[in-house]
Image (cartoon, rainbow, N blue to C red; front, side, top):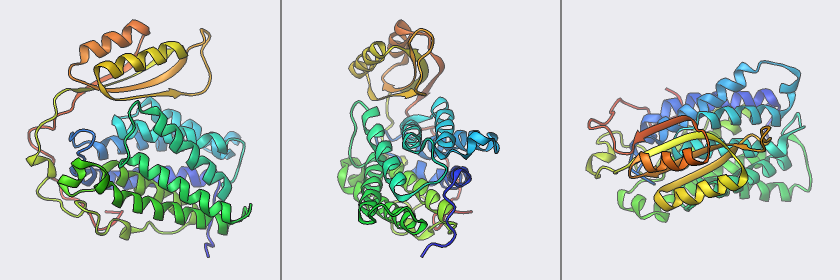
Length: 339
C-alpha cells in the first residue's frame, strides 16, 4: 500500500522538476535511438528543453494562493512549455500538459478519477494536434496510460483514496512500458533498426516521474532494462542511416479559428509532421487565438511565406533535420534514471 502520497500542487511541481532532471540525464540516449518520424537525433534534447521550460515556470510561481490549484499549476506550466516547445516530441508533451490541466482546474488534490480524466483528455488532444498521427509513437504510450488509469478507476467505484490513486498511477506506468515495447513492432523504421520509439521512452520516463512525485517513491530504474537499443551507447544508431533532407519550422502566431484551419491545410500540402496546438484558452481583442505551429518541409521559405500571409509569427525557429556530421557520443548511464 502506498503510504507517502502527496497529490497536491506541490507534487505537480516536484513532478516537473523530476522530469527535467531525468530527461537531462537521458537525453543522449533518447537522441541516439531517435529515428522516427525523421532520424534527426534530437528527441531527448527537445523533450528536455520543453520540460525544463515547464518546470522552471512552475518553480518560479512560488506558493501564491492560486498555486494551490493543481490544474492552475499545470496550465501555467503547460503554456510556458508550449511557448518554448521544441520538435515533435516537445510540442506533443506541451499539448499533453495543457490538456491534462483542464479536468484538474479548481481541484487542490489529485484523485484516481481526476488522473484518469486528465490522462484521457491529454491523449485525445495530443492525437488531434497532429494532422497525420501515427501509432507506435509517444501518442500510443499516452493512450495506453490513459486507458489503464481509467480501467483502475472504474474498478474502484468512485474511491477517492490515496490507495486508489496509487493503483491508477502504477497501472498507467505499467501500461506505458508495455506500449513502449510494442512500438518496435508498430513502425517499420523501428523494426528494421531493432529499437523502441524514443518519444515513447521519454513519455514513459515522464509518467514514472509523476508516479514518483505523487507517491513519494523512488523512480523505477528497471523500467528501461531490456528495451531494444536503449542499452547500446556505441555505435550511435544514426551512423548507418542516410541524412534526412529538409528543415523543421516552428513559430507562435495569433490566428482566428478559420485562419488556423487554413494554415494547417496549407502546411499539410507542402510538408509533413504538421502540429498545431492552441496556446491558452482565451482570444485576444480581435478574436484571435494563440497557436504553436510545427512542420517539416523541404525548404523553409514556402512555409514561412504561408504563415506570414495569415498573421505575424513570433519565435520563428528553423533547424536542419539532418544530424551534425559528428554525432554526440558522450557516455550515458543506461541502467537507471539518475547519474
